[in-house]
Length: 84
Image 1: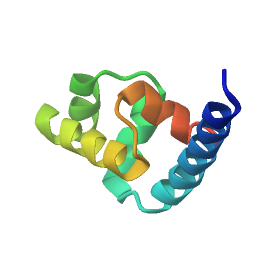
Image 2: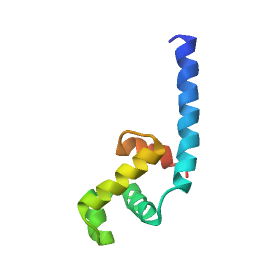
Image 3: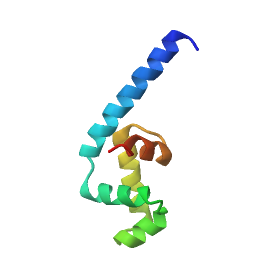
Image 4: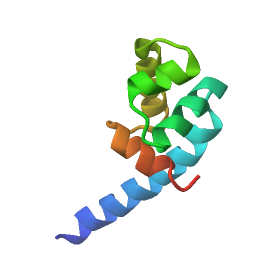
């Protein structure tokens, strides 16, 4: 691995960490509820049933959290926010 790539990867990791802390502060109360259930491994339908909202609404909350955290998957979302 070239040094330039390593430095870029380190900077990207630091930026992602900074964004994850900032993004958690910007989550809405409902997004925080959805995130809590996601962390417990609940599926989208289960989260919707528990919170009394539609599956599509749960998906929109997850998409909004991913956008705020600048990640591209649920796994990345949970990894980025697991330290918080």
